[in-house]
Each structure stands twice: as structure tokens, then as C-alpha cells.
Image (cartoon, rainbow, N blue to C red; front, side, top):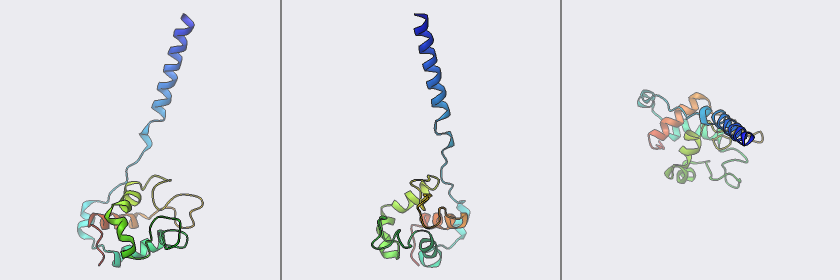
Length: 135
């Protein structure tokens, strides 16, 4: 009986330590830019966002016509369905720090950039907050 109790205590201790050391303490939420930045920054697809999208998303083999990636981001019109359902926001802003789901992806096979610069992220965040203006 004593061995059984020690076994239960050992399993419980191991489980507790495993749970505590593998819990979500290292998860990070995407940092949204300060509200002041978006209040003062004029952001639109044509002014800043298109260049960011072309560099980080809409290149050969990625979010362009005929690629396996969902969506064609080569123009505002072809990208707009992914804006209205908030898919763009989810993968670019909300999941920014997720190496598998965040966009741009941090995969070894990704031929493009693996991360947005802080400036690019801030511009895209303000664009999302402004509800995706085109001009």
C-alpha cells in the first residue's frame, strides 16, 4: 500500500511540474501600436500598404493568382474578401508571434521575408484599425 501511495504522489508531482513548466507563460499577444500613432498616421492601401503586401505577401509562390496560398493579394480588389471577413487581421495582426500560423510565415521553406519590421507591423495595424482604406 505504501508503494502505491508513493507512486500516486510521484505521478501527481510529475504531472504538476510538467503542467506548470509547459503552460502558456511564454505565449505573447501581438502588440498593437499606440493609439496615438494611428491617430496621427494617414494610412491607406495605395499610400503605404501595397508596397508592404507586395514585399511580404504577394510574390511568386505566395498570395498571387495560381499559388497554393489562399487569396490573391496582388490588388486591393482581389484582396478585399480577406479584409471583410477579418482573415487578414487574424493572421497578420492577431497571430503575429505564432511561427506557424502568423503571416508572413516563419517557415524555412518560405521564400519571402519571415517577419514584418516594426514599422510595417504598425502601418498594417493602423490600416486594420482604420478599416482598410484604399485611398
